[in-house]
Length: 551
Ligand code: GLC
Ligand code: CA
Figure (cartoon, rainbow, N blue to C red):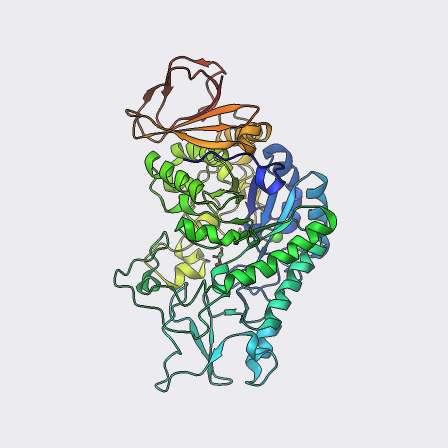
């Protein structure tokens, strides 16, 4: 349990809600079956007005051979023609800013595409000035790779290049060549990339796969993992057969993060507009995660908290996580929560459509910044992709473990029309359209006052208008006899006190409120109860969550 005082002046990335757009899948404006930036621009009023989110995080739209759908960047300072051009990007930023919505871009610091000019130069000869921008080593005398490091996407992390007879390091695909962050010229170039986008008025960065920017300088083997189960939240095959202590998160990472943060802080100091550094780093040990805010809060503003991805969907487990997370935060550090993204099975598939509403209520009422994945506001489920339409290289390289991320990347359903209003009806979208299109689409759900979209809109509106939800403290309630399936917490500031109650069970619950707790219902996940005083006991239906005002 923790009870924290409200920060003096909460900034947008603290009180706001971040919405992740995967541009390939959001809206195809030019009719080639692939989403684009003009498509995001078309939908800006949906995001800012209809839904009411505060910031849009755009997954990569940079020039790329698309081996990993944009996470293999061949030019950090441009837009891939598939997605548009810099003028469209600028127009999107202007349209968002005109509506008070911030733009966060994805920054992929750990690796480039093997087609990037830097890597092309680097591989050309052993003495090319760019050679040391990447990690090259001779094979061992027996011809095997320099060490045992495994790539996340299967196989060895080393790839032989016949041109010079050496091997280069790749933490993901062989087409995603790891940059050598120990080379100051690389770090300087990457800071210039940050400046390029800051000069185009972006409000922050989501920094990709950060753990990989700092590795053991001696490139020592990873120890073998006798358990053969990783500490990641999903089984990853051979990758789990080693303990990943040397191929990522070397202590030097903290210095690198501070260098990046300094760039953002200078822009913020110059024009007074707060910028945000959000970091993707998969750490489930909470005290370790806390270190990525920086010893003096000089690193990431928000190291993504992926804790909710790993937990069973159960009241106790989640309450324990939230309490432990709150208690683990360094003084002044701001919490955040994630229920899904382009790498994870969708929440409605993980917990079931009925519980997706409860999950949305949880995400939008906890203390801290929520990141909402596109179409989760509709309760969209994963879309099965037949093998002949598979796209994700991870699923294809490590078969049999359900690692494909295609199902959570299906096109956003805007209407019930063929191709969902995502692309023209006569064009094949890059991934299949969801089969439950008739109910799960924006247009239909906007017309239904009890739809998941209506719930999400109401929750976002409630959150925006509530100082307790955006800035107030968090305190879990517990007492002997409180049912195991019930999670209760209070959000409170000087102006208001709210009670959030969640029934994680599939049975109805009756929870007697402690004497003196007088509550008025504000919102139920079922959207079918009027605002009303709650008598001495709280009646929660299966998988129902509520927000109530406390007297
Ligand atoms: C991050 C991204 C993922 C990508 C990987 C390599 O985990 O979220 O989509 O494949 O990094 O860049
Ligand atoms: Ca397109």
